[in-house]
Image (tube, rainbow, N blue to C red; front, side):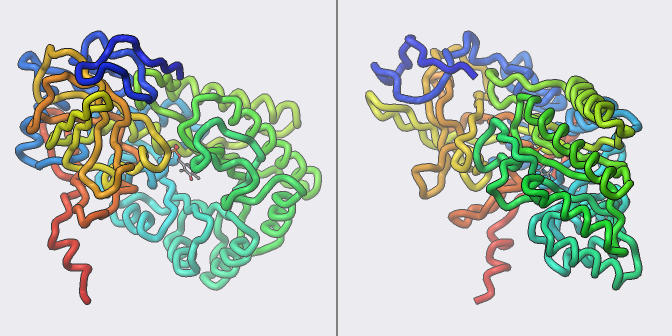
Length: 463
Ligand SMILES: *Cc1c(COP(=O)(O)O)cnc(C)c1O
């Protein structure tokens, strides 16, 4: 990502504030298709539309803030992943990115499988009719109750994350009189080039069992000994928002080396390898993600080559994209409340949501884009910081963005690429009810997750 301060001054300050931003775009009304959902466009009257519906109408009908999800785009991206990997591989959508019953139905229809990592996600998946054998259960601290529910529901795989869990799952399966399919999650010791909190393959962290020191080989040994378990493969998830394929290459090679050791020691060729998720998306025009077919080709080649070298039959590959499926398909629609110009410093644009509906900026220093969507403007670009309404100065939605200088209270702005890890990480900070998710397709909009109300919040308060 190349970033540079632009010499052209913003309207409200003689000196550009410190920060990372690109040059102001030549046309603030343009919507970069890299960061916006596919059916988004600007109509002749200047209003942005999605699925043929003007955002002004969505705001009137459903209120702001709201997450607006382009169902057509979601289905197209899910299908693109499915098609790219073909019938000899499996695509598990990572439910933690965003999960609702409508999403589960779309995934089921489009032929994807589903990763869950809590009892709540499992309940959502099952209640919307995802067949249990298409569900994988993850997590570094699954409770006894969650393990029991997953095994009795008949989930297709449980991904074992620790030595105690190998024993717990085997015990539960024996009690329930079944043989549970499992994979072992390993940490391969790769440094993924991403934020520390979303990198998951280095060894000093809570997920997985290290390949180093023979720990993963020992886990395989134990899992093979226990009759409640059917060990089908090895799992590796190296992190999130990754663009560089080299981390996956090293991970796949190390996992295949383990498969080779397992064959040599036990005479067993494990039939599956899961390379996890983590594929990056464009949050700003500076990001250049790869298409699913390129990723599928690269990953398949990496695994095939490593297996040929080890004289192993190529295992069935699975991947677990979350962000790359849902991230680009939604935007958050906000109304502008206050515009505060701090002379010589910065312009703050306050919107009616904030860190409660998008924690990623505060948590990961994530970068986003933003655009005025309720009208067209030919005003000069103004460098602004888009902030929320919460009682925290770190309540930043978009750190540095160019918006038209005539931006005013009542205007609608939208932040694209908020489909993943925004609604799913939303909180009630300051007792702000969480926004709805509105799905749009072919000129129709419907609520798939309703707006939380103050009554919802008060209902939990029983003191
Ligand atoms: C979070 C996670 C994913 C999905 O990651 P994305 O970056 O959303 O693609 C996949 N697999 C596992 C095990 C995860 O923890």
